[in-house]
Image (cartoon, rainbow, N blue to C red):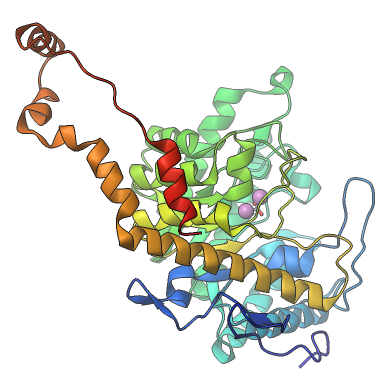
Length: 433
Ligand code: XLS
Ligand code: NI
Ligand code: NI
């Protein structure tokens, strides 16, 4: 045991009436909702990077956190893992997620970085064996080190492409070794700042080939997890190639990967792309590529990826409703890709941020599940599209344009507009949140 979280108790469910800060008010892992334990529905994951590797910097100032594991070397990396698993135990989260660079020290050469990664993966495997938390997903950090400043797979320098391939291979191996259920590729710096120095077509082609080779390797080693792309429209690049779910789907189709790769949708990224979170989830589900989510919000005034913990259950309920409609997660989960604010120095802040996030999600999920089970919204939606149930309407979809046009004249079709009932449906939602 380290003494970082000393005196902080294991968090238990006490219900909405409790005055205990260190308790869940809404997240009761064993409560059965829609025939399944909440823990198995929500599949919470802690993000290693924001909680244990981020020093608290912003564009105007550097490190604010002084963690005993900050610094170089394997001993500190192992202390970080010890503290991380202590936090997973306190929270009872079933999963975590990590990048190579969060967990291992960077070496002077690729070979040294690889050895460090392999050593820490051994250590994480031991931790997993004696603790509850398992790996939701692994990923490679292809954006922090200066070698990646002009991109990874889309870098104009073929040596960087090669280094990216070696890095992703090592991270996929690590994820497989740790029994990870998914492998995530977030575009990082796969984008560009200015067309003046960029061959967009070539970069996009390289990104496509890179992803194909990742999928080929996944099959070669028999990795059973899902490969997920995490769309984001900008930041750090001005233009990211994986802008949003629709863009990613077009990209996957282009490279024949739409049956191989799914998406990890982040709330804040959806907002940056000018969408709602629920739109991105619903679209991905309708395209058959919904995988997992990163549950961290932006500040609506900043227009930037501020990665804050969710604290508005009404907003998240609409997103969980779409996840429920999509049939829930299979391999995916609810990953808090969220960080505490840089003034939140105390170990307690780290714990309570997650407690609040988990409670917010649980409350949102329960509201969404109740509305879904009542069939109230679904019934209204079915009613709205009921006209398409007739054999005649269905047959029309197979007719050529001129035949459909002829039927309008022959039957004197004269459609009468009907209310979309938006406010009534919003009021219905209000009954559940
Ligand atoms: C950054 C992304 C990143 C991915 C993992 O905006 O959200 O944290 O989730 O590389
Ligand atoms: Ni993000
Ligand atoms: Ni993310």
